[in-house]
Length: 346
Image (cartoon, rainbow, N blue to C red; front, side):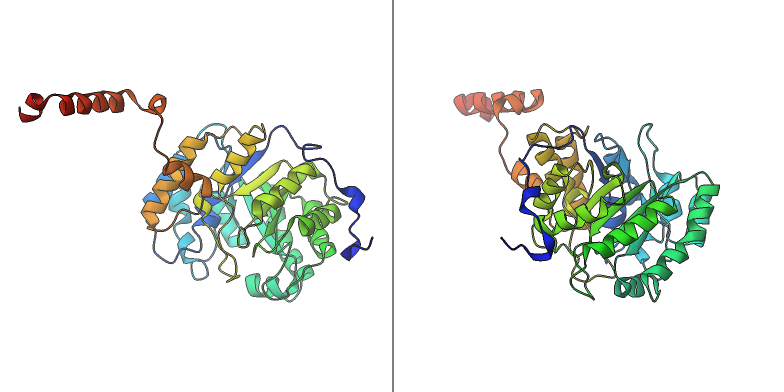
């Protein structure tokens, strides 16, 4: 049987084989989720957003980006936001810091982990950080990584466009593996593989991961799927089956990329946690609290919540045993009033 691009059908496995018992969720809503918003979002609302997320059980919340406000205006308040959030013990608050100036600013406010990003294609690197090749983009990050190491910071590496590029189209898995391997060798403790425009499918995801895992241990790989074509959960499931145990996601499905117009929102954290709960995979995240935060931030932004789970649960009437004591008392009082006209007229 002929399969395109060397896919081997023998690599298919039962749905639960190899799936980790616990998955780390990296919440990217405050950074990746908000960076593409056109409206100005006050710093105090961003701070409140992060503080609310800190109460949901998440262990990693990407807080902001130390980038030039000319290119990403929404992140221009990075120092104010990072300094203003209540750092909760046991939670990591990484930031994006793609150049030395941004890194120095991040160090000044006490950041402990930074992230850098490199596109898997030369075209995306040119549009994003104005380098002429992937190799040149990687070279430009060497002083950033060295300075971060010198300051004792942890470094996370993002690879963009791992399943497709808005400028090049198809991306060969070997291109992704090359960038992931270089970032890993340069000192990034974790490599997040981002389907920036959301074109990946379970098959292309599997092919890409098989190639990357030749060079980077699966324990050091994270996946980051945008849900443009509705494939993100399916791609995450395939990733889990291959032993990946770190998933990036964004509350309420917020997100986009300033340099990729086809990039719609990330997969929502609510939908990911719901799926994990249904598979008996521990995340430590309280779904109900997370849904409340997602509804709150989308109200602030005056936009649709892109979490299917949040929308489904928020529109369901509560069962009697889910009502609060106050709601039960109010319900009982209303029933008594309806039965006794004299009470109603008092």
